[in-house]
Length: 360
Ligand code: GH3
Ligand code: MG
Ligand code: MG
Image (cartoon, rainbow, N blue to C red; front, side):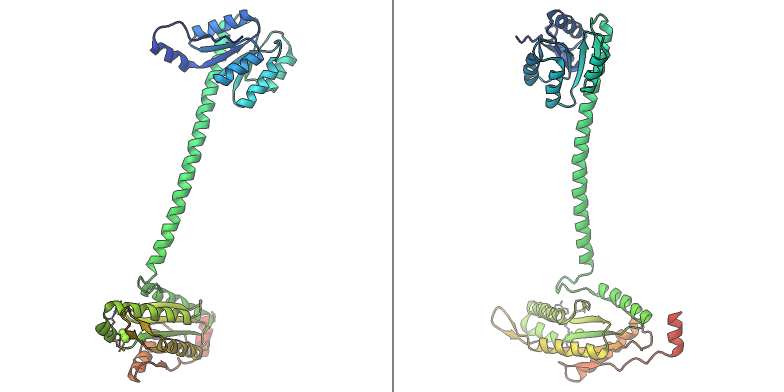
């Protein structure tokens, strides 16, 4: 049943390759003479042609050798051209099928095109130039569709790669930003972040007449801890004290390592009297902590604290002024024997003129 006509009779492999490059066509007709004429013309024009003498035969050939274009008769014994087209389209919805209709019927042509035929040709196929031109067109279109599908696939792949790279970039940026504001040893905010946060919170406090407090904490006799137990024990103490301060603060407070063994905590919307409660709670928690070194040695750290702040009625305060006042309070706590806190005297109340100029 199945007859497969091969490429032109040539001994040159190079020519064979060129021929097959032009396209693979399957010619289907139950009339032997039509199959012979059409395949001869196409082969002479450089096509690689397969043939089948009916719908069932065509499906068998196609299943082994998918082609670029199928030329099929409509009326055939057994499976007709429409049925064959339906089966082929299920295998490849983009396959270009040219229908050869023997009768000059508008309905048959219309039905063929509506069923997904790429083009149609009327028998007898005397005009060979037109036959070749129609097959050329169908083959070019098939090639373009293939290239298009390939490009879309490549584009989708590069889009996925781009999205992945973008996600990685966002993640790296996030980590870099976090690193830029974090102290590497204690994982608290660093001095840079603290200065920015204090500026931001103070201007908000001054603008909206809110309370705000600042607490500075310094480990007592830390040099001695380093000198007696070594730098590693000193680092361990810093980390532990940082953890206690952080646990003692609210999540809305900003806890930072100010430098060396000194820490700063900004407490937004907190009166100095309440900041003093925080200071005492933190002091007691550090005093109650015992750090046990690998060799069993115990360290009992203590801290001194300075507290300063503004009530909602206070004058507008500059960061420098607040730092200077809280530093003095901390120095005073050290003078009083350490392991204690001192609250700085309150800032003066704002005058009516100051309140008016803020509201303007
Ligand atoms: P005071 O009670 O008056 O605060 O005395 P102190 O010994 O704590 O203060 P001093 O300023 O004399 O010494 C602070 C020490 O902290 C000196 C410095 O070497 C040490 N230090 C600063 N940063 C670090 C650090 O990151 N790790 C360790 N292990 N030590 C540090
Ligand atoms: Mg100290
Ligand atoms: Mg110090």
